[in-house]
Length: 191
Image (cartoon, rainbow, N blue to C red; front, side, top):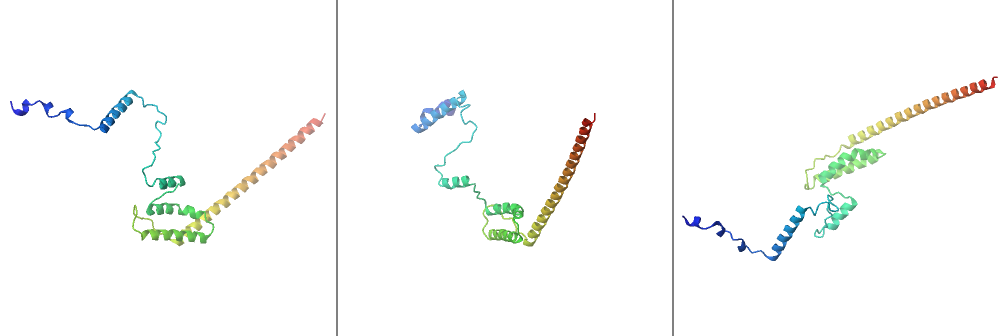
């Protein structure tokens, strides 16, 4: 027999040789107690189960800024994404304006923001938003406005026609009712 075969494997590992400090022992005992309680089901059906935790942010130095942004609904997006969102909503925003001068001013301000963002170092995703062609945008706005006006005119005409038709039917019903009333009164008057 060789020397390694003669030594029992337990001699290489002695569990008593590992020294644990008090804090580690307390943590191990607490963990063991928690695991046993979970196995027994003591944590099932607690109030608030399945709800998100409201973790305090005591250790976050910017806690007040984050709460302010959340409370006020502020969104802090990189300029490239913010400009994409503005570009997507620009036509709808322009449709709310009533004059061509206001539309021109709004499109020019949007283009200034895009150009300013192009000259700044990128913060976040690359900027893919391009400045708008002012004349084309104003022309499209005018076309949409004319289309809405035409649609409103047609709708008003259709409503007027339907009111006239309803009035005509109502007059006809009244006339028939009067005739029936006269007939029944004549019929009642004859002996």
